[in-house]
Length: 310
Image (cartoon, rainbow, N blue to C red; front, side):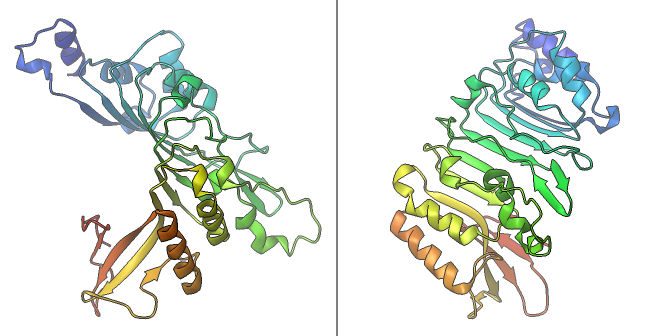
């Protein structure tokens, strides 16, 4: 069907309903081809009206086969969401060069197993996109094992992304994993422990408006305190989303600790929220509604929008 839609649109058949001129978004799961059909991918991406493409289960070979024989310019695509089982960052960079109008990028890199050597910082965004991306989400599972320590691959600094407004990633990808492995370092008796941590203020762009961090970070209170203390360097920052929850039982806040976060004690929570107010930054707090006899029924954000239940 996609070749027909593409052909009709390229022929400018404006009055033909089969051309699907209002088609703006395409979602495709390529599991049935093992993620390895570049022709199928090309047919969908080259439909002129399509601006948003979301693809799951893409194999590294599909991008290699896609970019090597082609010199495509797909300026119709404004938003990409891609999930890979395994991908070479250099091939991904070549692929992204095909999208000169890209504004939003969401990449999930699912590396199987553990890497044999310590990986360099992850970098796959072409330089021209560093200057125009507005929304970036990255999830990367690549890890390197050194003895009993698992080292998460970090992102290259994003300070050069001059127009980036929204960033979603993992704690360990952004600031490093030293704080995550410290529980076991005491038992390693002087072994060479890789120091991977870095200052969050050195790796995020000054244009950022919303920062969404997921995963675990024992030093989260200190990291956020440091960020808020340098708020003048990030004048547009308005929202922090760290996975905080406000628990309601039968419509009432639990009195013990109404703001719950695994990395913040009650005192740290109150201090952090106070710093947010002083800095003019809103801490996004998700509301979990529960009854006395059941587990979570629904979850809502600050605006009251339902986000699903357990």
